[in-house]
Each structure stands twice: as C-alpha cells, then as structure tokens.
Amino acid sequence: MNIGIFGTGGVARTIAAKFVSLGHTVTLGTRNVEETKSRTQGDAMGNVSFQEWFGKNSSVKLATYADAAAFGELLVNATSGTGSLNAFKSAGEKNLNGKILIDISNPLDFSKGFPPSLSVSNTDSLGEQIQRTFPNAKVVKALNTLAHPLMVNPSLVNNGDHTVPICGNDDEAKKKVIALLNTFGWKTENILDLGDITNARGTEAFLLLWVRMFGKFQTPMFQFKIVK
Amino acid sequence: MNIGIFGTGGVARTIAAKFVSLGHTVTLGTRNVEETKSRTQGDAMGNVSFQEWFGKNSSVKLATYADAAAFGELLVNATSGTGSLNAFKSAGEKNLNGKILIDISNPLDFSKGFPPSLSVSNTDSLGEQIQRTFPNAKVVKALNTLAHPLMVNPSLVNNGDHTVPICGNDDEAKKKVIALLNTFGWKTENILDLGDITNARGTEAFLLLWVRMFGKFQTPMFQFKIVK
Image (cartoon, rainbow over all chains, first blue to last red):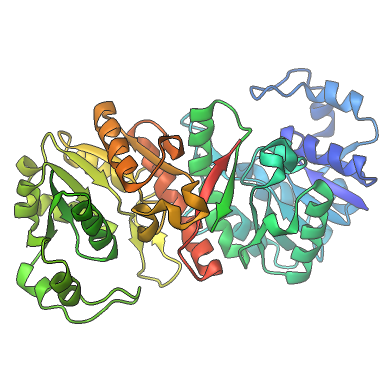
C-alpha cells in the first residue's frame, strides 16, 4: 500500500520504518523538503538528525505535504499537534478526501516548558478539529497515548499486553486501522474502540497524565492496561 | 481517628463506611443538615436515598461543613467538584489549617449532559485551587481516578493489581495517606506518587478518558494498571 505520513520526527520515522518493513511504500510529507533534508542536528528526545536517518532509510521518500498526501492511499498524521491543521491545509483537501487519516498527534503546547499543556482540550480536540476541517477524510485517532517505540512494537512492555484506544466516525475505516495495528503486533482484544471522534477529547487529555508519568518514570517506555 | 468527610453521595458513603469498619469515627459534612436528612430519593447512579443509608449506618454522624471539619483530624473531600470550594469556604479556614485533606473530587461539569467536561482543566486543577485557597491545609489528591467501590476494595478488579496515582505538596501527608490506602487494601507498589499538587492536572484530566470508557463498558468496575 502507498502510505503518506505527515511529519519527519520520531513518530513519523518509527511508523515509516515499520510500514516499510511490512512491505508498504512510504512518502513522508514536510513543509519544506530542502530545509528538512539539510537538517544535521538531532533533537532533544534523542533522535538522530533527519539527514542521518534519511540516509539509512533510503526506500522512504520525502515530499511536500501536498505530494505526500496525493501519494498516499492511507495517510498518517505524525506532525506536532499544533502544526497539524496547517499541514493538512497545505496538503489540500482534495488530496485527503475519501482517505483514512490515522491521527497520532497530540496538541501539546510546550511554550511554558515541561510538562506541556494542551492547545485544545476538554470541550474539543485536535482529532475533531481535523475531522471538522476535512469532513470527507476518515479520521481515526489512534496510537496517540503511548511512546512511538511501543506503537509499532507493543511487546516491548508487558509482553504486548496493554491497551490502545482508538476512535473515529467511520466504522469501516476503524476496521482497517485495527487490521493495520494487528500487523504492528497489537492484539485485537487490546484495541479499545471508544466510538466516534469526539472521544479524542479523552485520549488526548490522557496526555496530561502521560507527560507527568513520563516525568516521574524518566522513561517513555510504559503503558496502561485496562483491567476489569 | 476522627475523620470529617465533605459530601453525602456515593463516594462519601463508601469512604465513611470503610473508615468505620476500620475503627475510625466519622462525621459527614453537608450544607444543610435537615435538608440532607429529609432526602428520600435515590440517585441516578443507583445509590439509595440518604435517609435509608443513614438509618443503616448509625455510627456515622451528619453535621454542617464547619462542624464536620472541626471534628476531623483528617478531612476527605467527596463533594461534587464544582461545589468543593464553596463547601470548604463554608467550613472555615481555621477548621482546615494544618490538616490532611484527601481530595477525591473531580470538577465534572454535567451541564451539557454525558459525558461531562471539566470546569477547570489543562493549565489548572481543582486540587490546586483548593490548595491555593487554603494554603495551610495539606491537600493530597487521591482516589479520584476510579469508581468508589474500588477505592476501598481494590481487589474487586484484577486481584487488586492496578494503579492509583496520588499527588500533593506535603511529603509527610502523602506518607500518611499511603498508609491509609494500605488499610483500604492498596499495595504500596500500586500507589503512584506523581509529585506536587500540580499533578492533579493529570489525574483530573484522566476523567475525560475515564467517563468515555465508562460509557463504552457500561460499568464503572474497571481500572488502569501501569505496565513497564
């Protein structure tokens, strides 16, 4: 499958590499292709520079948001949440319409340092904003509640036995996302479909707890498991 | 120990009965004692009327907020979150000063139906508001992330193996609350001290996810367990 991933940071790279390992073809989308390619600095999260990563992942292509979106039969939002809407607007609605858009992003606002707050929350969510702005895209919020190494390799903690919530308005799209998550190693019984996209208010707000647990544990390699 | 519990609903009753079973003496605080005693209607959550419950729990006393606060060596906030600050103001600061105040409440706003939003969130929290308003009380946010039957009987799900976050500015107060939670059946390894009271932004925001899981499961008898 041809997949367009918005973003070039840790989440985008992890998802891209996993899709490639599963035989899919991936184009990453960015605002300015030449500027992104020229990045030689790693980031504060311990990710290597884009140039270094790109050199080692030669089957992944880099393109503008519009070209990546046009390329993808399925799209993934792995931009920083506060830049997501502008990225999609720059991609153009016609390149999104009818497509599944897996939204992994969170509207984290680091303007006052760590821990971040959310730039939209409580009575709205980024997932809903994207869905409202692009009503013909099939937005499925997923994987935004855990660290990116765990997204594509759930067995890294508790033998893969923990919970990932998803939500979205289109049941067929969610079925396809669940099948994709299965190929990432997620057991269907651990994928919790909360319902429509308004449930993103819950999964995004969870980040306000997640960032504090991250601060406490000093590692992102943890997860939650719902028990009954 | 003499314990003053603010509130007369399901959470207050469950905590009161548990404290009594452990040999403590409990006074519930309410705005209007006679009005509360006259309540003969159960609530939408399946709790019996206050009159019926009070008749069966004869060792529990009912008093004004001020009298319950004056009585308690330790205080518990089990009011609805949107009424908490007024309840404490009515109790009088001198009746709170120097005391541990376990804040179980959540600022749930049901004015637009279910699921509720939060009346304070993201960049502030009810726990912080209470601590700021009463700087000489020792506010410990605890037990606000799960259903009340589980608060005092964690073994009701997953053999008691799940996580309860706490936070507060006073380390000695938190130690005492952890010891109390141990008497409720909580293993120390499952009590997650996140740090100071600002972490209530995380544990209260979790309710935005909790209420949606409650809606999905159609039962409050679930919990989360942090796995690594």
